[in-house]
Structure formats: C-alpha cells, structure tokens
Length: 482
Image (cartoon, rainbow, N blue to C red; front, side, top):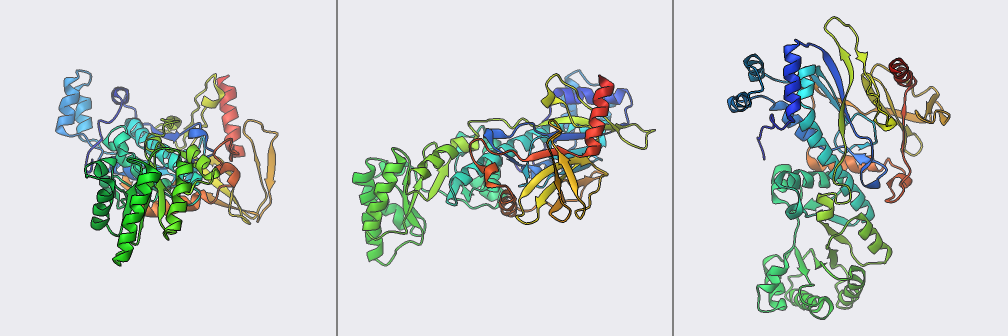
C-alpha cells in the first residue's frame, strides 16, 4: 500500500481522451472542479478528506516501462502518444480545501488548473481518493456526535471493501472524530492510536470463562476490558469480571484502564444492569464498552434510553457507510484558456436536471462567520479574482430563490478563503499535517456548525450562495446557450 504508484488507476476513457487531445495538439489550460451535489447520510455537511493521498498520487504520477508496454499491447494507442506518456509528469496547479474541513454541496473541494491532458488524466484517481475518505470521515463525525463525547473506536477492517478501503477508511474515521482504530496497518502508517480487546474465541478456548478473564488480565493489566457476553452476560460474564477485578485489587494490581464490553443482546438493559453490579462491587470507574452493528442512530437511541455505555466500538456501518455507500463527487470542466488567450473563458454544463447545471469559471470559496459566535453564517462561491472587505455591508442571496436575501452588516462577520495552493507549476507547496493534527482541526471545524446543522435527522442546511459576479456570469452563459 505504501510507495505504490496509482498512475493506471484511471478509467480508460481518460487515456483515450488524452490521446485525442494529443493528436489535436491541444495546448489549452483548463480549470476543473471536484465537488459533490448532496450531503451523504442525510447529513447537513460533509468532511473533506483524502488530500494527503492525492498529494502522494500526484507526486508519483509517471508511466513506467511496464505501464507503457501494457498500454501498447491494448492496440489503442499510437507510438508518438506512448512516447509522450513515457516522459509525463504533472506541471499544473492544484488548490484544495484542507483535510478535516467542513464542506457543503457544489463547493470545489479540489480545483485543478493545468494543461488539458494532465487535468483529464487525474480525474478518476482524484475522485476515488476524495470520495471515499470524505464519505467515511463524514460518517464518523455523525457517529461521534451521537456518542455525545464518549470515545468511539473504529474497528471495521474485516468488513471493509478491501485492504485499501479498510486502511484509508480507518484514517478518515479518525479524522472524523474516532479516538482510535483496531487496524494495525493504519496505526503504523499514520501514527494513530490502536485499540482493541479480545474475541469470543479467547473465552471459548479456555476451560471456563473465569480462567479466560484471569489470564487476559494477568497479561494486559493496564488495558483490561473483558468481553462478558460469550455465555450469559449477567449471570456469568459480569460476575466473573468482577471476581477478576476483586483479585487484582486485593493483589494491589488494579489496572489503570479496565472495564467490560457488551457485543450482543439488549445493550440498554444489559448495560444498566451491569453498571449497578459494577458499582455495587466498588468499580464505579469501570468502563462499559459496546459494539454490535452500531451506527449513529442506534447510539443515539441507546443514549436516549439511558444506556450506561461510555465507550463505543463501531465497525461495519462506519467503515462501509452502510446507509450511504458512495459520496457522489464529480469533476467538471469550468473554464478554458487557449494559447492565444490572456484570460480564461468560462464553461458551463447544462442539464434538464437543474442540480446538474455547473457553476462556471475559475472560482474560490469564501466562508462567512458570525463574529460574535464564531459559527458559519454562509459560504460564498465566487470568482477567483473577487475580493471582499469585512468592514463593508455584504448582501448575500439564494442563487435559486433569489428573493431570499440578507445583508451582513460590516464588522459583524469575518471571511476566510477555503481553497489553499497545494501544487504550483507541478511542485508541491503544501505539507500535509499528521493525522491526529488533522483530527484536531476537524473538531474545531465541526464546532463552527450550529447545532441545528449537526442534528442527525432533518438538519438545517447551511446557505451556499453565489457571488453577484458569478451569478451574473452563470445566467449570461445559460441565456447564450438557450
């Protein structure tokens, strides 16, 4: 997985289009936007993720001898084009929203400004990376929000759609808010906390449950979480766990971190009963952890039922985003500049489906914050050369229902431009932070959302408006095409 080149991780038509541009001697510089149209899982937002892997992909983007030989044997590509590919490297510019950022539909998460052949080639891999990790980071943020401050561990590797999805997905889950993962490879690659207990097979491999617990506690005295539902949670599992804790306490070897895990049954009922038993035995600081096909909705329900669970292990439904298994990001041409042109010419895609009509031109994103609360007021997609003065009144409006307008009084708001340069003229100018630093940044980003936007069901949408110049440009192109 490390040091692996993804040059041929692309759709065939990217290469056939490249050859077409090559034959036509196309030297156009283009702007492509990678964005999405709908928040996943019914969420009011998404989390941008995957930029570090995009950077690695671009840095290693070159065609090996084996790549060229494979393409030659397809009998689709001419030798002059293959010779061009043999010396290929990316020379364009890439701008992106930092990983861990809160984002909304139609905003460019990544903007590519490059020669048309280069911009075309990277479409598929870029979308593959950003779509997947943004999906899992968003799902993780929802699960962690439902847990209301309790620790959430990601442990879905065995159910993930392959090694890459399991490992990159675990990274994204940690960025989204999980406190750690069971995935050892992810821990090694991205220096994130590793967590785990033991399986039912550990219990079953011993002559009795008590001996299994005692042996495990002796081996791992400072991380002793015992799985109590192999035989009978309340009649056997919890009493045997308490017996082991009693013996450790009597021997002066009480663990610093200890507790029980529930993996089946009525988690609300069992956790409350187990809590009473542990408290009565003097173990009020014992953690009760739960797993068993959890997601944000079940966790939220258990919290509302007063479940005595303070640690959550979430697997399948998180690592696969089971209720919404794809992110839906797209990559669309927004502007083009021919060799003889000084400026970009905006391009627009028109569809009978209004949601699929693109925003034209070379753009950026301005985030508007309420100065008093620090919360997001709205996002403004604007042309890249636009500037704004926070001391001046700013009128924003819904780009569809244009009569919905509001004026932000000068001095009452602050502005931050979201897109940052990542590659300039093919050279990487951005150092990706480590995963845990991105996680901290993501937590701060989530704190800028209003509670109404974070709720799990029917969240309040954040306004994503177009600037007046961009709105005028879009309508001009729509009228011309009409």
